[in-house]
Amino acid sequence: MKILFAIQGTGNGHISRAKEILPYLQQYGQVDVLISGTQADVFLEQPIAYLLHGFSFIFGQKGGVDIWATIKKLKLFRLLADIKHLPVKNYDLVINDFEPISAWACKIRKVPCIALSHQSAFLSPKTPRPTQKSAWAELIFKYYAPCTNRLSFHFKSYDNYIYTPVIRSEIRALEPKDLGHITVYLPAYADELLLSYFEQIPEVRWQIFSKHCTQAYQQNNVSVRPISNTGFNQSLANAHGLITGGGFEGPAEALFLGKKLLLIPMKNQYEQQCNASAASKMGVPVIQRIGPDFVAQLKGWLQKPFTFKPNFPDQTNQIVADLMKRFSKIT
Image 1 (cartoon, one colour):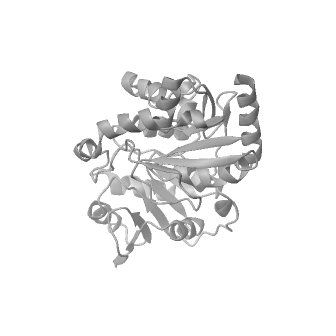
Image 2 (cartoon, helix red, strand yellow):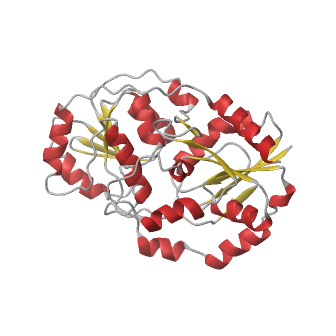
């Protein structure tokens, strides 16, 4: 069997999950990997058959997406050409992790495409949403990467096709400790802004992992480091807690390791608002923006205990087996 595994390259979660899924997929046949997008900081060891520009949202430094930078990065004619020329008919099975080029190539050519993603969980009305739903963002969930069938991931099994998160083997192998520091990953905020707040709580050591610096440095009680998979994993394993955006894989891994968690979802990023809503229902504190009261909010969060114990079993092998069963039913 020839399988195309198409992965969204915006953010790190898609590629991190693919690392776990690929070995199981390879038991069923030859797997070619496609990655589109430009914002990932982790990489696959697997050879990439198709590395495409795709369509990526660019992180800003004020808490949201940099709309102008995103528009400048968009190459619409290249995107359409890639959809037209991608040879999806050469494959027996196309698996899609919220990747638009392969999804639309399959839709146009009437080739079955199975979603294996977090975003496809939002095709279920049972998946938590924020109080204010966004009609246009709901359309993005539906049409950005259309699929024939789907298996999905979220913090809980909100519907019968939704599984709990795929936790990376390297995270499962860690022995978590509490050495007192707080790990911070807020790629949509400038380092200088974060420093101005964290320095006001000098009794806490803060370890910021930044998309905006190339060399590590220390400023009083705050260390700022470039993104490093190994460095971040060790920091998180030994942390008292994690402050991050409203992503999915990062918060899931922190919960798995038993870490206190604080979410600050990106502004105007509906998926992160949805994730934050789901996490909030589990008792995870959520702050909607970094503002004048941020230091007081941080102090309150640091003082409050957090005892949520998630159940995230290792079921990747079963997920891939279930995907193959679904594929056999639609062919």
